[in-house]
Amino acid sequence: MIHRQTLTQLAADLRARKVSSVELVRTFLARIEASQPALNAFVSITAEQALAAAEAADQRLAGGGGGALEGVPIGHKDLFCTAGVRTSCGSRMLANFVSPYDATVVARLKAAGAVMLGKLNMDEFAMGSSNETSHFGPVRNPWNTALVPGGSSGGSAAAVAARLLPAATATDTGGSIRQPAAFCGITGIKPTYGRVSRHGMIAFASSLDQGGVLAASAEDAARVLREMAGFDPRDSTSVDRPVPDYLAGLGAPLQGVRIGVLKEFFDTGLDPQYERCVREALAVFERLGARLREVSLPNIPLSVPVYYVVAPAECSSNLARYDGVRFGHRCRDPRDLQDLYKRSRSEGFGAEVKRRIMTGTYVLSAGYYDAYYLKAQRVRRLITADFERAFGEVDLLMGPTTPTAAFALGAKTADPITMYLNDIYTISANLAGLPAMSVPCGFTAGLPVGLQIIGPHFAEQALLQAAHRYQLETDWHQRIPEQYA
Ligand code: GLN
Image (cartoon, protein in one colour):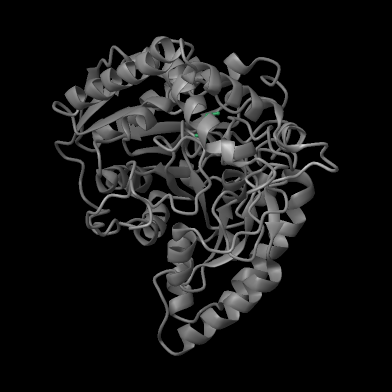
């Protein structure tokens, strides 16, 4: 069965001409179409362009050429700009926006030969933890369609979990790669801040946003990340540093690797069954030769309040550009300029985005700036310092990705604070700019559980190695929801 193959296998079969890209694209497109009513993972399906790209890829493969991902079907979260194909960011504001250029991530994957099948649904402007804030309706979890897939990269995660695609791009500002990976039982990596270009990636909170990959395994994620990562002069926060070959050394043993078990991540609100799965995963690492010890990061409990000052502050500034003039939805028959701004923004943005813009404007305003924004930045520094200290003693940190498995649609929409607390374990890595992963490590009441792995800056390779070694030992990452098996 084609859809059950890993991306690694598909790439090899394409190269060996055992399968054609057109065949793969047709297979996955059929699965995508069939799944749409139930999952709503896609905002746009680009069948025609995909088939044309697949034919071109097949020709290159026939001539013995092509890139590392030649002919491999992928999808992009709908905030990566794609020339000629709508980029909606899950918002009414950009419901008709067609970018004139490709995001660097999109361009690089295209250059590597990957074939885009469509744009994936997401929380509006990547703000959310459940994919319920999308203008295009919620995405549903393939393990149980009464449940959310997580957010904001819920479309990307649901698509990979249901094997509608072998891999998809995603972004993570406070957990939006790792949390949906955990909820959908797949592997996700958020690289170090600056590792993947943000050029053409629609901004939410610029000091936290980072692009990454959702895939079925660490090996597949490594294969895609290798093509995405690297310096981009068009992103001023992109880091000019060589990209290691993330596939090299994937089989490396874990003998002597020092793993810190994050004390604070087990202290509060963690579901006991979830904890049991994570502890069992840690025991596997120990069996493989890693050395475990508990590590405390005392400022970590402040991550959520700090994030909900910093992220809204940055979003209020980034989203000021959607004024109905330069970008975005424009209201009908404005009376005057003020009316144009007001109604265009009122109509174009959903409730969660408005809440963030208002919070952000408030914390940045004269008189409150010192009390909120400045203080949050100071605590952010302390959180980063906690991590730096920890990485003086251990190589990797581990803990749960989320406090519970996937929750029901509608369960948290009435109470934003409860929703925000779902990211309690993921946000700190963004505040400190660290690379972090989520890897499937078991099930609680039939729902996937995620193990989170956090590393020092630019330690993507170490994360991928540890995750891959674990996946050679376990088969959680191979489980597929019955209906999509
Ligand atoms: N759930 C978090 C939020 O709502 C994180 C979102 C993200 O990482 N894009 O802001």
